[in-house]
Image (cartoon, rainbow, N blue to C red; front, side, top):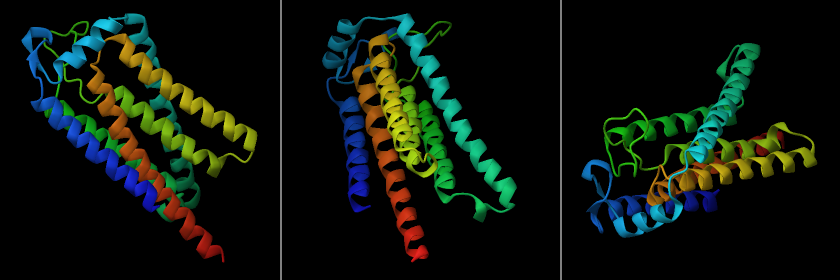
Length: 222
C-alpha cells in the first residue's frame, strides 16, 4: 500500500509542477484568439507534427462514452448490492470507494473548467470562444475508469484467462484514447501529460485503498 501511495503522491507532485511550468514558462499567444499557451514551443512543435484529424476526435469521443458506460455498469452493480442487502454495509466497499473516485474525477473536471490552465489549440465546432483544455478530460476519464476496472477484474472475474483478456482490453482502450486524443489535434501535448499524471495519481490512490480493503478482509477471515 505504501508503494501505491508513494506513486500517487509523486504523480500529484508532478501534476502540480506541470501546471506551474505551463502557467509560467515560455508562454506565448499561439492559441485561438491570441490565447497565451505555456511551454509554447514544445506544444506548437507537437501540434504541427500531428495536425488536426476530426475522425480521431470522433473516435475518442466514442471511447469516452464507452468509459462512461463502464462507470455506469459499476454504479448499477453497487445499486443492485444495495437493494439486495438493504444497507450500505452490504455494498462492496471497493464499489463505494469507486464511487468516491468517480466523484473526484468530476470535481477535478469542474475545477479546471473554472480555473483555466491552457486553452485548446483549435476552436471546436459551434464554439465562439476558446475552451479550457488542461488537463485532457477524456484522457483522465478513460484512464481512471479503465484503470480502476482493471483492478477490480480480480474481484469479480473468476476465470484467469478472462481476467487477463479484460485487463489487456482495458489497457488497449486507454492507449487508443490517449494516443487518439493527442493525434486528433484538439489538445496540446501538455494537456495529455496532465491527464495522464492526474489519472495516474487517482488510480494509484484507489489501488492503495483496494489493497487496504483486501488486507482487512483477509485478516477478518483468519
